Length: 194
Image 1 (tube, rainbow, N blue to C red):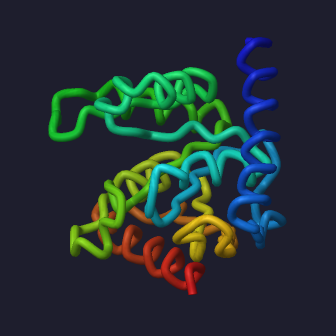
Image 2 (tube, rainbow, N blue to C red):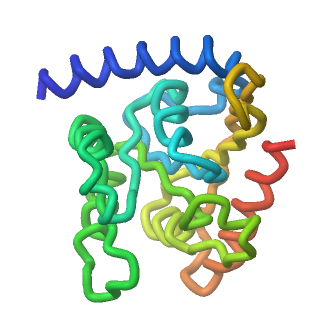
């Protein structure tokens, strides 16, 4: 839809300027992101509500983020999810398979999907186990995973760095290895935050 593309493009420019000025943003590794026409899963650490817009405006591709269903109550986030075709997930509802179908369809259409394996903000710090969603979709579709590390920028005017790692290929792995795949993804994310 033309409206979404135009508004999305403007939003990315505004966000890029915002991060450059307010957080003195430094971007590394965008050459590791394959161009369009290839399914891709971006997996980053999740520190704040700024993470999805930060990835969206620096990744060189439109990213369809998975987000908890409760966020649709926030009008700004709901509009954001609409513009960039986000996928809502009802946490704790194992019967809701729509987000799984939507994500598989997106990857089949060579879209770029964004997932935070921590499942919640600062999940690693809270000691929560990482979720296997990204591993599941990578194993199921053969889509490559790009680990993303975000560091710095704890407050305005303190430098923030976002690093995109090299693509991880989990094709040939099987569903019994999801925990191991998730661990490998998280190890790469942590490396990129240092």
